[in-house]
Structures are given as structure tokens and as C-alpha cells.
Image (cartoon, rainbow, N blue to C red):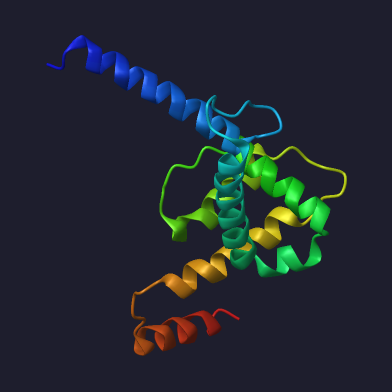
Amino acid sequence: MLPSNNSSKTESFKAIQNVFTQYLRDPENNPAPTGVEDRRMAVYRELVYNNIEGFIANSFPVLRKITADKQWHEMLRDYVHRHKSHTPLFPKMPQEFLQYLELERNQHPDDYPFLFELAHYEWIETALSLDTREIKEPLINAIICDNTAMF
């Protein structure tokens, strides 16, 4: 068992981490941790946002291309603020963004009516490109032949 002073240090550190992450998620509405100069916080703020934004933009290139910059960044900032990711794995991040679009994003008047469907299609493309399973050609031919008999 840890001495009580270690326990209070742990709780204090967790509180600092909580303030830090809340600020990084939503710097407009949360204060920065005390005792850390803004120049240093700006580095973290920009790194976190730019990494997430870049990864999502690369995962959904068509969605990014057709979405105006202002709207795109508003949506991504809302995603960073609102969505609590369930995995630290980068290849799973597009799926996390899809969950945000489907379950957490409030409909915006500027959103395309097909926003989720396009994102889902692009996610499927990514998921298939990362799938390492080998597909056996004879099995594909058998399935195609069986299905064409139905038409």
C-alpha cells in the first residue's frame, strides 16, 4: 500500500491532467493549467489539433475536399471537444470519427444531407485497404457464378 502522501500526489497529478486535456479539447471554453505559459500550451494545442485534423482529412479526402475550410475546422473542433475516443490506435480513428458523425454531431444547416453516408463509404475504402486477409479467387468465382444464376 502506498503512503497517503503518494496518494494525494497522484490525485493532484490526475487533476492537473484533467485540466490539461479539457483545455486541449476545448481551449475556447476551458482554462489552461496554471503555471504553464501560453507559448508552451500553444505548442500542445496545435500539435493535438493538427495531428487529429490531418489524420481525419487524409482518411476522408472527398469529404474534406467538398467541405469549406471554415465548416471543416468547426466540425473537427467539435469532434475533438465532444467525442471521447475508445482506442488510441490511429487506424481506428476514422471509425471513431464516423461514430461522432452518426451519434454525436448535431445537424448543422451547412452539412450535406449525405455527410454520414459519404464518410461511411470512405471509411469502408480505408478498412478494406487495411484488411490483410487473403481472398481466394476460386471462392470469389463460385460466389459470382452462384449469384448470377439468381438473375
